[in-house]
Length: 77
Image (cartoon, rainbow, N blue to C red; front, top):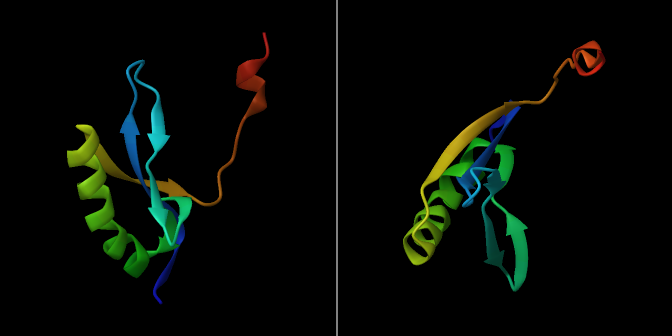
């Protein structure tokens, strides 16, 4: 498997505009469509397309950095 330093996820926006990870039923378990393995993400694309059509969703693939620096000073006044 080809792993990356990034996480990839299929997401959709709800009615309020909040992005949520797409969740599919795989082997009778609900699982989010997120991975750091590029081959897994490619295999999940069909599930994402099927769910988008079934629920009339606009789905996109997003890339998250695995290591993030957060400046908590931005949250303080």
